[in-house]
Length: 70
Image (tube, rainbow, N blue to C red; front, side):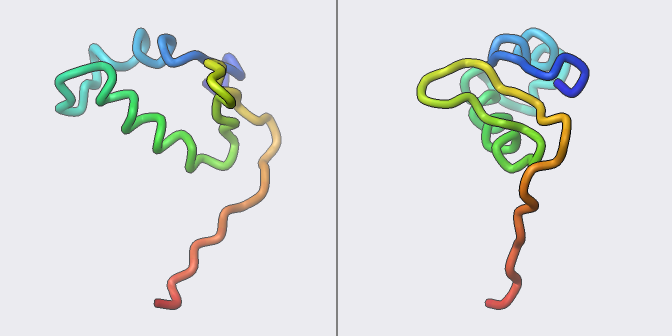
């Protein structure tokens, strides 16, 4: 994604699912896991409002802080 700067769901599936199914029986279940992970990456801009294009930020966005004060 970094090299192309943007990708669709199907691009991820075509490039990765067959070789790295990670134990998921369906592309949909696999994608839900991948999508959740991508949403946590600072430089990834998720597809919005029913859109399909995921984008890679060439410069870092805001750093997400994690609190361990529980």
